[in-house]
Image (cartoon, rainbow, N blue to C red; front, side, top):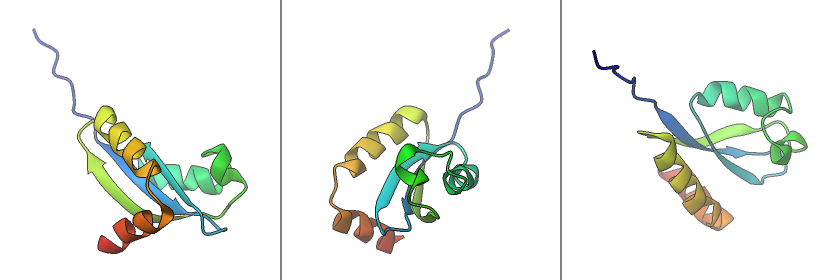
Length: 88
């Protein structure tokens, strides 16, 4: 009998930090991840820039797809990230 693997949903997300910087990451659960960031346990970058607020998210079919998009967006200027956020 074949094992049916449940498809995972991954999300790319951008948060605005208290110093107006933008953090880009991936997760399976955006709400839980934002909560971790705001508790200081999400990432070193956001730990000293709390609170953070979600500014953009997009769903991906798998982790690889989300990671590729994360790498792409991390190379963008802050202005370009702002424009992405404004389109949603």
